[in-house]
Length: 205
Image (cartoon, rainbow, N blue to C red; front, side):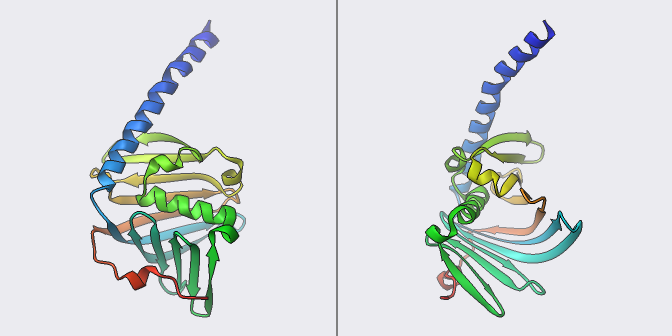
């Protein structure tokens, strides 16, 4: 009898959880429709699983909806990443590269997922991730677990924390399949900041 009750409870809770996610997506997407650009400072702590060591960095995120992201890590890292409709690119003091969507394959897809997670239409991620809403205190926490084999090979989980306005990002946690873990905590977050088009264009290889 006990196992039957537990099974029934799980069956009944699944639609409720799905409704909660759908409602949360609708609320976040509605909040995001009200802005075009977002600029935010952040601190990043990356724990290297195999070495049990943590690397701390500071940087700035620039997002132009619907499909452009610039992720800059300040010195001593001094590297800039771009995600655009053409693919992704990076630049350092010693060089860089542009990688097309075709060449990027799985890794490029995951980077595009991150852009959507931060400021895009969350419904586009449903085919690739299962979502839950662990918390709705002072905003909400959204957690994503990959459900396709190609994503599982790279990402273990993604977690997003937003403020009560549902557009201000507060934190992102990325758990990688390798055991590495990145915690990105955002500081000053601004919307509809004027962004120079040139800033969002990666340098040519």
